[in-house]
Amino acid sequence: MLDISLRDFLKQRGFRGLSLIDSVIKSMSVTVLTFQLATALAHLKSAGITHSDLKPDNIMMVDHVWQPLKVKIIDFGSAFETSGARSGSYIQTRWYRSPEVMLGLPYTEAIDVWSLGCVAAELFLGQPLYPGRNEYEMVSLQLNLFPSPSVLIGFLFHSLKYMKLYVLKYSKRKIHKGLIWAKLKLLQLDANQRITPRQLLQHPFISMSHLQELIPHRPK
Image (spheres, one colour):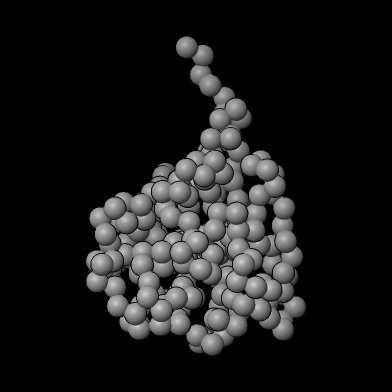
């Protein structure tokens, strides 16, 4: 019924990342995708449901040729009622697994927001943000990339219209990658400080309200 997953879409592109934003709002961009996924997570949160396995493989494009801006979340086989969440459960695919799940701490639907941050970064970079082979490597990558948990990871804006890239190194490997600073708090290590889906939707960068002046209006 649907077309291809975002994983397959990136593969077809030779794992070249997408643009952060498209000023004319006509082509696929990280911002457009993040807005749709945040909308879906907001609905799940209001229904008291946690997906628990958000990743590029579980995000399908409706039609990457004729409807390239439209995506849907699939595979709710691991979803559960958030009120019934139990710490210590083996959930989330490793590269998109939140710190609280790996550490066996209590968790909420905020784990889906963490996964969304990982997905958004991967769409921008063209490759996984935390490609750890086990949970030890995952925690090591998350902590070694940034000096302290107070450093937020995610998107980087300078005002609301301009972006800067920070060059970072992956662990001991000298792989330089452009990353985005965490003003959106998608990848805040402290789940209590992580942005909620509805807060994300209200952020000017994701709502793209600051770009309205750039969109040509039809004469009445």
